[in-house]
Length: 250
Image (cartoon, rainbow, N blue to C red; front, side, top):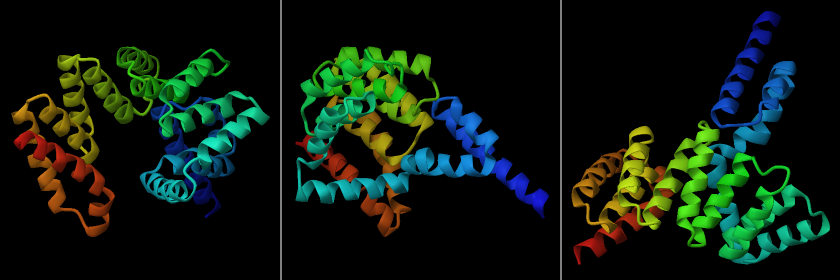
């Protein structure tokens, strides 16, 4: 039995090691996982794996929504206070993200630019956040350049999220052919609800009814398989699609 237990710990560590490599995490996590198979796996689960899980993200979004309705400026205020008190790279990144969430796109882009000049400027999370801020701040071309460079240097870093943002950056920059190719690549690799809705909405907005019809058919098929909980999770996405369909038909 002890041998079985040790083997299980190693298997869990291997699973998290694969996740770390695929998600573009720093390689020191491999050292943590294999030097301390049980403790390292527990730490990785709570520090990295759980915050990235869809369930945790849904809970976090719901919590932020409730807190935001009660105190809309809380996240930004707390991030600014933390940075003023301790102006570390981590707190500056937090402030930049809070500014972006608050719609302060120019300020967020400036803060991210400062983060990129700091000691953690090569961190993929910071570079991705900077690309988000640039796109929101009407700098779609620069956002696309940053995302393509990030993909080249960290090909395993959140490929679905990066591809979706890159497709939107191409579209906003007026690079229709590149946007179409990126959306097609995205849906082929990640044929989920969010990616198909994004592709369908883009196709409708750019007068590509055949592409939109194809995605709508697949979404209709998926929708029939949803239970009530899954349907509620995707309600906002389908509202966005329905609005795009209504606009296109007018």
